[in-house]
Image 1 (cartoon, each protein chain N blue to C red):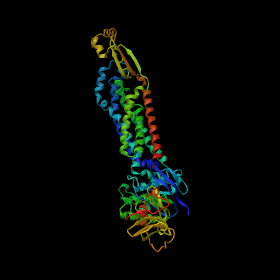
Image 2: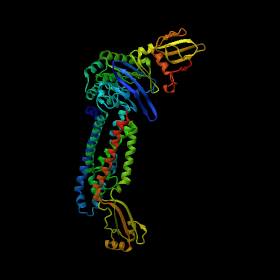
Image 3: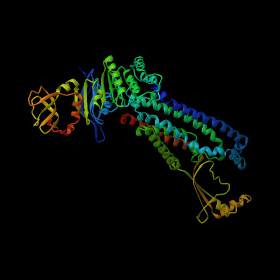
Image 4: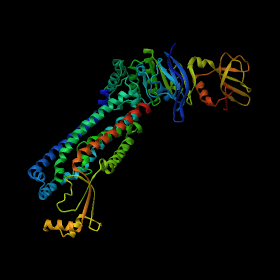
Length: 299
Length: 317
């Protein structure tokens, strides 16, 4: 499968601060990817680089094989919903759709109108008079009416209440099922995205810590519980992500390359949230001894 | 793009056109009256003959003193365009994040910016041009009466410069908005920047556009102290011993009063050695100065616009 979005050693610096550093990953077509990381990890920077709002300081990013900053035409194939779903609040909903029609060569206005009507959003109402959830739906419809091949959403549900959150993600999944587009959704909470995503890009402290198919990632990580002892050189363990030591017992969250048969260890499966939290608890890559030794954590 | 720009800014445009229409109605009504009084009172004819028009003139001035009083209001109008059309143009988009919506559609940010700038600058030039023409016509009778069109503050209200000020104010507002990224602070920057530039040029720069003329002569009653509507920059009167004095003192020393024979006074002033030195810009430089000031403001405005374009292209995301 070819990569629809590819970052290579991508970096963005503001003054002395790197907002994103040495970021490499690729997103295969047809996936719904969660871009997860704590606030300030660089998610917005990465998405802005992806749609050409920002130019990289180092490395490069390509959409469908073209750099978006140089080749604007590639943006016609991408739908983007920025953080806080910016819309002109003085416009009527139907005027927002006119805006989309006027500014894009490829535009399916009929589909967008039907979609918004189906959601019970009156086209004649001013955007400013809509609820937050409705505005997010308008922004999503606007992005989807371009008939994009890739949809990028920056914290689309962060400001929504739980019900609107669920409705928004449901609407998004319906659209994905209908059109088969690839999606990148960012959030600082994995719980928001767990149900809808099948690909993960984990961004922590300006660096990509983990990326890949969620099922494979979850399958490759195990919790090992055993007697307190050295955690180096357990057969089958590729890297220890997190280790905690009680008086007589050690609990590890480890990335495995093959099944762990050592009878000293009890092996348990992890869920995605545990996995992400374990990685978030790690010290920064640049501060870690190489190769991955045991990272100590108490508790 | 045109549709979007019109849809976004039609309210401001409508407000601008309405304000101009109201101003125009005021100018036309009161201006027509002033023009007709200027003719019917005989002041125009009298002034054309360089006669002594004292009585007619003071009658005219008294009648229209209110209009002369509100004149300073017109100094503010170009600034308003910068505050309400210029500053929000980009700042509002950046403030609300809507630039990210527009820039990720099928239109590049430079096309977006040129459409917006084209609209607001075109409208500014059109409306400010119409306004300047009206104001110039309206002010004509008042300036004919006193010959003061070159004076600071009055020079600034007519001819080409009101349009240049408005153009500059808009460019300043646009650039401030792009850099500051918020509407209210951008308006504050526009206000301060505009006043600074106006004070610097009007108060210090303008008098040096061209080297002024210096004339030294005995201040006899027949000397034209107005220099036929020129702009007096400095005046120094000395007596025969070289001490500083004033023209009034010279007249007093020569006992000049209404009934004194002119010849006697002239003779006395010459004899006592009074010399008055005026430094001034001659009246016939009015349009030259209008042109220089317009070019100056226009040039600074273009530099500010270039800065705004650079900033939006490179520094905004």
